[in-house]
Image (cartoon, rainbow, N blue to C red):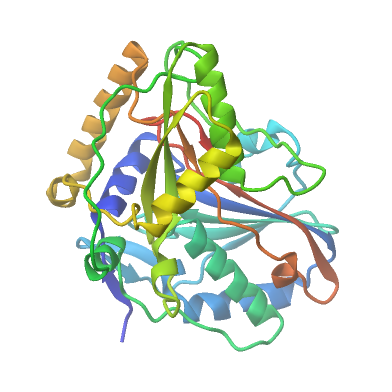
Length: 351
């Protein structure tokens, strides 16, 4: 039986954002040392995608359906991920096709020591969903048993199944840019890579405290962050590539340290503060994506003109991941980077 699932309100919003800010994608960059067996890798992508049809979806009559087509694998020239070259690489910035597919693809850049980029439309996957699919590809490459994706759940299905949903947070347009007022609408995505010599603790708390201090220097007393939280943590048996994240909203004053921010995040997670349903979900789910895109564009323009935003930044973090998952015979993983999609309703998105 063909795999099919409903489109959640959040995913309808992402489809609208894809019309405005293509490519509205999650992109995972794997840097490696060694050589990849191309034939074996192509077979692994096909096997993993067959067992995880969330990687083969296309929009059909208001539902996600399995196209049956294996996500394409493109072998291209080497790129340098230590610069902004990615923003100028056509294959990397190419939109994915929601209605006709593919909604996922793989780029293999270079012959020796290749950089492998896994791309997924955010309308079908979140970062954890993409990570699960990538892990399955490498399981298939090693001829290990695949876990598969049996779930048809969407984020709103999962939220409704969790007892004691939190009250939706009150959100207003009071956040100023931590870097100062925007100078017009800037197209494209700015990507910077900053490496730490050693583990530095909780990344969201460090970034949150740092951005709050930046805001304080501009006499902004409170900074508001949106932190996507993986809802799969509420069901340890759940295996899915779908968008199963929901935002944790955190307000931070300019004078707090990273330890205070981390404590606040953990306390809010323990109280299920990320388990809430937006009162606008029903409207987004029923509205044409063209209308939703128009509303998003109007809000973006108003926020930029007034330097007042819903959030100061998005802090995305998938946690620590062992590189052993992505190392195979003849090829060792050196680093794994996750590049977020960018919706300009919000200011910086920091992975």
